[in-house]
Amino acid sequence: MFDLKVINSVLEQLEEERGVAKEKVLEAIELSLAAAYKKEYGKRNQIIRAEFSADTGDVEFSQVKVVKEPSQVIMEDEITDEDAPVEPLEEGEVARVRFDPEKHILLDNAKLIKSNAQIDEEIVFPLEKKDDFGRIAAQTAKQVITQKIREAEKSSVLSEFGEHAGEIVSGTVQRMERGAVYLDMGRAVGQLAYDEQIPGEHFKQGERVRAFLVRVDETPRGVFLKLSRSHPKFLAELFRAEVPEIGGGTVEIKSIAREAGSRSKVAVYSTDDHIDPVGSLVGQRGVRVSTIMSELGGEKIDVIEWSEDQTKFIEDSLSPAQVLEVEINEENKTAKVVVAEDQQSLAIGKGGQNVRLAAKLTGWKIDIQSKAEPVDESAAGEVAPEPIDEVAPEAEAEEAKKETTEEVVAEEKTEE
Image 1: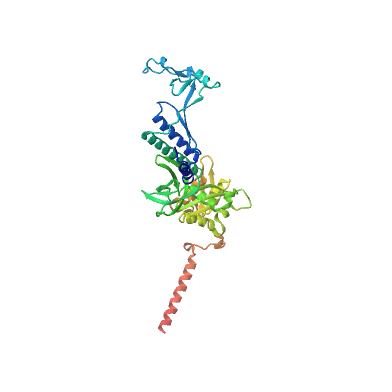
Image 2: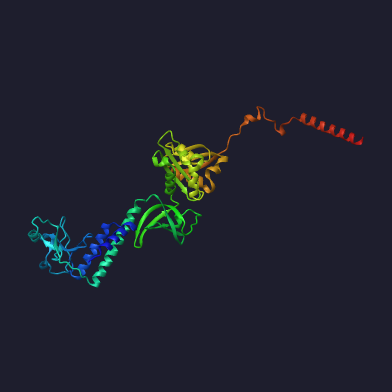
C-alpha cells in the first residue's frame, strides 16, 4: 500500500529540515488514514482510529466506543420534545448526553466484552482492512496530513524560539515595509518594528542584524518573532555576552535607563568586594564598553555603581555632574539635589536628559537646585580698600596740587 522508502525518507527530511519529530508525522498519517476510511466506509459519528507501522507498512483500523452508564446518557425513548428547554443542573449533577450507539456502549454490555471495564473507558473494535480509497477520501487524507504537519512544525518553532525569548538572536534582512524590518531567522520571520529600532539606523537587504527577542507570537500566517534593538534588556544582554563577570554571577546589572541611540545609564553591583563592577563593564582602556557602543551606533553609556545608600546612588546617578548635597523624602520618593552653579547645566543635561535618565535609573523624582559658591575673602587681605567716596578732603586737595605742579613743569619744558 505504501512505499516505505519514500515515507521514511520524508520522515527524516521533515525532522532534519523543519524540526518535526517522526512521531508527529506518523500521528498525522494515522489521522489522515482514519479520516479517509471514515469518509469512504464509515458512518456518521463513528470514532475511527488507524495504526500505521513505518517498518512494515501495515495499517490496522478500529472503531472506538466510550463506556457509559445509564445515568450519564439520554436514551432515544426518553426524548419527547427536542425543542423543549433544558432544565438547569442541580449542584453536583453531571450533564447527560444523548446516547449514540456508534460511539457509546453501556457499562453492562461493555463488561460482556471486557469484564473489568470502567466508566469512560474506551472499548476498541477491529474493523475490516481496506486498501482502496476513493478520490474524495484520498483528498481528505492529504488535507489532514498537511494540516497536522503544519501544526507540528509550528509547535516545533514555538518550542525552539520560546526557549530563546529574552536573549539576543540574529537574522538576515529579508524586506522592509512601512518602516518595519523583517528578518529571516531560518524557520521563522522576525519583525523589528519602527519604534523598536535605534533612531538613525538604516538597514540593507541581506544585512546580518542582531536584536533582542521580546516574545514569540503565533499567528494564522505562521510564527512571528517580535524583536527589539531599543529595549533596555538588549543593552543588558550585550553586556552579558561581553563581560564574563556578569555570566559568572559576580557582577549584577541592577537597573538600566536608556534613550536608544543617544545615551544610557547602567547601575551595576558586585557580590565580590575584590571585583570592581564599573571596571568590569568598562574593560581595560574601555574596550568592552566601546564594543557595545559601536553595536548601538555610538550610543553613550554611563556605568554607575549601585548602592543601597539611596543618597549616594542618586548622587552617582547624576554623573558626570558633581553634587554638593542630596536631601531625600522617603514618603514621596523625591530627592532635592543641590549642585554648584557651574554644574547645574551638566546635572540637568541637554534637554533634561541627564536628570531624566537618573530618575529612571534610581526610581526617584529628582529636583536639581543650584547654590552660589561662597567668595573666598582671605585672598583679598585683612584690610579692604577704602571706597572712593570716603577719601578725606585733605587728600583730595593734595592730589589736585600735585597734578597742577606737574602740568606747569610740562609747559616750561615745551617753551624751552
